[in-house]
Image (cartoon, rainbow, N blue to C red; front, top):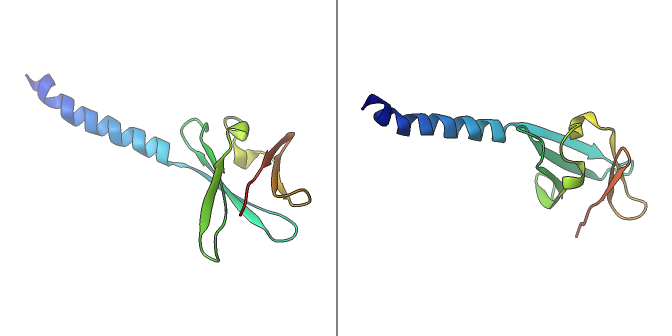
Length: 103
């Protein structure tokens, strides 16, 4: 009887533990030589969710795309990422180049 009563509470505890683990992550700002910048977010659980944000105005960024090609390990913050603007906006992390669509 006590075990049946504990199930809803245990479910809530596990739910909040999962949300806390998934909500913790990395935010990396990468800036080009001409001053353009992007924010890259990566979830803290297993690193498989990576999103790229570009500047919307002085204070805000807008999500442009997800980037599964740089997800996983090593984490984005541990890669040597740079932002190139010669052929459009491109994020280069090691040997991987990610095209960034911007308006």
